[in-house]
Length: 484
Image 1: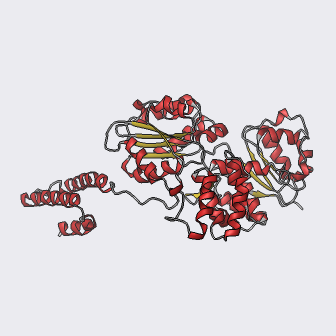
Image 2: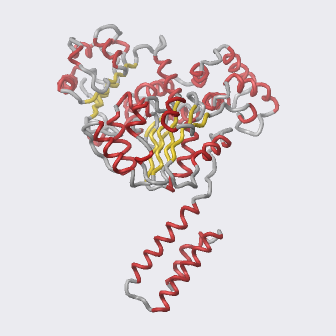
Image 3: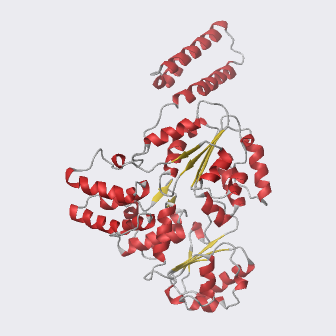
C-alpha cells in the first residue's frame, strides 16, 4: 500500500527513461527491506531513500530548457553561445563575462540564464545595476544585500573588511549561481566575488559590463561579446506586413540593431498606420547614428501630462523603490495609476517581482536628461550638487515640486536658514529625506511644525534600511503634512 502511494505521487515523473530507471531502483530497494522485515529504523531509511531519489532525479529533470521570453527577440543563438562558456556539466568553479554597449541585451541574456539554471544551485543571487548602486550606497551596503540574497540573513556590517570575511568564509561551502550586472570598477569584483577559491565546487559566476578589459582582468578569455541584431532577426514576427516591409527595414537600420532601441521603437509604432510610421522614421533620420538616448526619447511620444510626470518621477526619484510607496505618493498627489500600465505597454517601465518599479539604465538616463530640459528644469531635485545649489539660492525655489535629500548630505555646509528656503517652495509636493545626522533630525522637526505647505508629502528613511527603506508614519506609509 505504501509503495502504491509513492507510485501515485511520482507517476507524473514516469514519462522519461531516467525517471523510470530511478523509480525501479527505489521500488526494488523498498521491497527488499520489506521482505527482510527490517522494521526498526524503517522510517529513517525511507526518508533517506526519498532524499537520494530527489537528489538524483531533480538535476536530471531540470535539464529541460524553459521557453524563451517573448521579449528576447533575435537573442536565442547568443544565449546558447554564453551557455557553452558556462559548461554546466563541469564541476569546477567557472566565471564568465558578458560584454557590450548599453541596451544591447546583456542583462536579458543573464536573466534567461538565471531563470534556466538557478534551481541547480544551493544558493543564488542576481544583483543588477551594481555600478550605480555602489556609487549611491557603497560597498558595505552591497555586501549586506548579497548576504541577504545568498544566505537569507539581514545583517549590519560595520566595515568593508567584515563583508569580505563573511562572504569568503561562507561561500566556499556552497554551490552558488552569482550574477552581477553592469559592474564598472575593479573593487566591486575584488570585494564581492574575489577569486575562484571563494566558491564551492560547481559554482558559476556571471558578470556583465561595458568595459571589456575589466572583465578580462577577472575572468580571462571567458568573455562573450554581445552582437547587434542582424536585420532579419529584428522583427517580432517572422516578417513584417507587406505594406510595412520597407519602413520596417529602415527603422531597424536607424536603430542600429540595438535591442533596447528596437523594443521601445516597436512599442511606439505598434498599431500605427503607414503615415505615422513614416513620421517616426523622418525623426529618426535627424538623430545622430550614435545618439542612443535620442532614439529612445521617441518612445515618449503620445504620453499624456500625468503619464510624462510619472515617467520622469520614477526615472529621477523612484527607480527600484517599493511599488506600494510609489503608488501611494502618486495617489496622494492626485495622479491616476492607470498611467503606469501605459508606461509598461510602451516598454519604458517594468516591474521587478511585482514589488518595485524598474527602468533600464539607458531609459532612466534618458528620463533624467528630459527632466533637465527647459520646461521641466528645477522641478525635480535629487543630486547632491543640485541640492546644494538650491539651498545656496542658485535655483528657483518656486519651481521645485519634488526634492530628495541624498544620503549623507551635510546640511551644516550650506550656512543658510533651511526653514526659510522651504517656506519659499510653494510648489513642493514631495520631500524625501534620510535620517543620518542630528542636523537632519532637527530640520525634520521644524518642517513637521509647519514650514512646509499643507500639500507636501514628507517621506523619511531610517538608517536601518538595507534593501527597502522604511517610511516614516503609520503602517509604512509616508507621512502627509496636513497643516492648513
